[in-house]
Image (cartoon, rainbow, N blue to C red; front, side, top):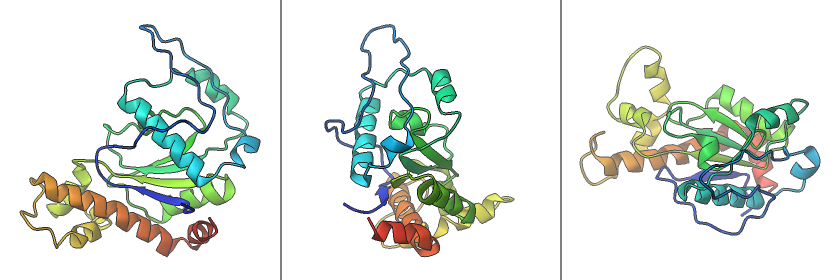
Length: 224
């Protein structure tokens, strides 16, 4: 796998557990967790990372999240340590949804990831520019697009909601609804199976738009 762009299907997080391939603080399995101070990633540590290594790190962190064994962190100390610079290993595009805490989902701390959030996890010019900065300028190795179950923005797109700026926002998700026309069944927001398909197609469409509208990211992907 040599792509810098990695899609996570719009389903419940189901990433499997494997042995960690980077330095992670061990979770303390006691009733009283003592916050840990992890070393914030440096440029020297970021440089040799590969997309495969970073993806595995996210999978391992997601397994800890699923198992309720998140690493205790002293975020205040990490903020101080990262004040002079940042060298995140990944860029994550997530939905605005308050039920999807990105750093917790992957058990990552300050300085580990750039996180872009917008209802429906789609890309526009501003988000693409942010991704180009994160990868081409700041050195991140992987972009992960994370959809999720029961996405309110996806449901609104299915229902063709029209309300203020929400109308224009949902137009970015409409292609995923059109991509799901072959669905055999009730094509409404009340049908979880149809919503599931549209969520997955929304991630796929987002990746297609990234490759189509960002020659910088496409070139980086093609070069591994």
